[in-house]
Length: 354
Image 1 (cartoon, rainbow, N blue to C red):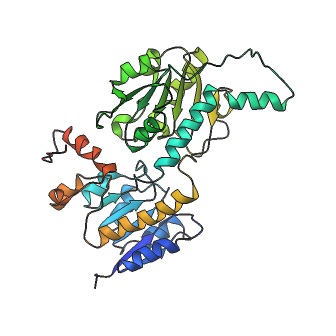
Image 2 (image 1 turned 180 degrees about the horizontal axis):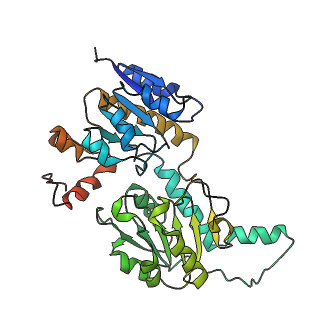
């Protein structure tokens, strides 16, 4: 029989967590929801938990200090920018996440936003509703074929975008220091991608080195009339620099699903800009991906609490502290972390795949 363990969900806001309960119960654990409690009380309820699940709430160093028994904490989602990873690593706590879900949804959403911008669907729809009819157009539209699409970040979502657009007669560029090239996609450095792309789609994770990865310096390299799409994380793109590039004519249109501050403030200039297409951080969503997320997050925390290592983790360096690095078999979604660790001279990485 597996050793019993306790998992506390400190925040989720889902209609039901019955599937998580079933997954954790099957692994020999107990799941307790503290979602209904004020956050300080929820954190206190997790003080003796072996594992913690959470979704959007920032998990701070102070909170982590209160997780006295925790082996792991797992976030419902791909991004891990709302966790103090350094504090978790110092405490010997594995931080898990779910980088393998919603790949189809986000890649499809990015393409949909890009095509809506290229074909100017939103502005045309608005004119039509006002009674206008402009067959010959005073707002030119250009063809897709023969253009260059640059993918900033070439993980599983970036690869899906490239695969879905493979037959569109586009030149495909990618920039990613941790990814491997694939047939039909040319790998270039970021300055080259910025100079040569007609369309740019962002798919980089938010880590220290990617915050404001696209800012004034990168916009200065771009062609006039470029279209940029961000379905990654808001702070990967410098909002102030984007607005300046839009008003200066470098960027023709932008499509944003993620923002530096979420929810997007009502008075944000981004909301009012006529050449920005907005969606409310919904690229991840489908009924199927929601289910996949909840079940996978539960399975990952159950794995950690059972004494095994998850396929994906946001702080693999914690395994050095735990003396377990050689045990880790990273999932396809997490292999890039090994290359990132290898780039840090203070952290030895001996894996052949790094």
